[in-house]
Image (cartoon, rainbow, N blue to C red):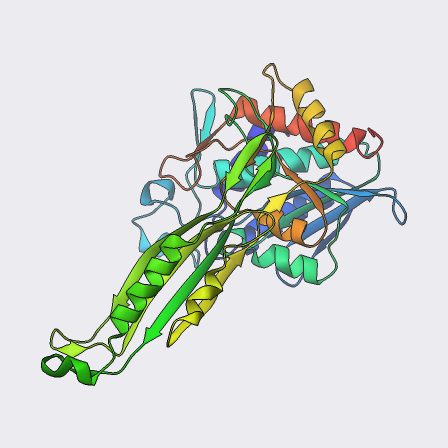
Length: 373
């Protein structure tokens, strides 16, 4: 089976609300095509192992089989309610043209998943080789967190998220760090009063705007990785407060999107030093940094041998499951076919040539690491 055929099969399976059918396919394929130990955990993750066990260092090829909701044009029978399943479609549209595969999940990240499945099957690993396809990556790393809590702890991991065309055109680079995301809600409370007697109350909007000013004045941390400066960022994104034009508001809240970097966090908790202001963290997706230079260089060498371009060590601006793995102690890098601006779009696509490149790189890494040191 070619990487194109396998990608087509994976992309056609709806998995934006229910990943079960896609997980069934991955599990059945691994059981049929490999002699690995394959299991499906309670969350729906598919995990397979082969190679030497016990004392061997472990390398994992990691992906996810959930996707974001497709556009109507990406769904077969999108207008036929009788044909729709619980996941909203009988199948997704997959098209091939101009050397690319088009369809929901082609770039993020069923193409990389297909490349990793084939590399896992074909490689004679240097140590213990693990394949893992997680659920719930698009909704905060649900599957990755479940696996880690259940003991999933590879020494090293190549996560197949996008790293193509970062340093230049037609190059698949090796990402050694990415930002995380912390989403917060900050709530200011006051005391309601009629606006004609405003001094009888305490204006929650005024307290909230004082907190906004404090957030604007905070200096987000930054870190230098692989010759690049990775800067944190704080952005106030929503604000809501008040009940009527003639009422002093008793409550006002706003949200903050924070892009975090490995190491320190911005001291957002300082807003609670203001009177009647509370801070709540709603989501915290961890950043990632690979601290094992030898591993990063080994993956870079494998990537270099699999393409004509000259890949580099780069950083990514957004969070992936690599953050959860790195937080748990796994040394991670990211290497995959998706290009900036390609994922989650209505005409999402992936280069077939780059899928082949990724398949070959994954195989090389599996056969050369950890003995490449």
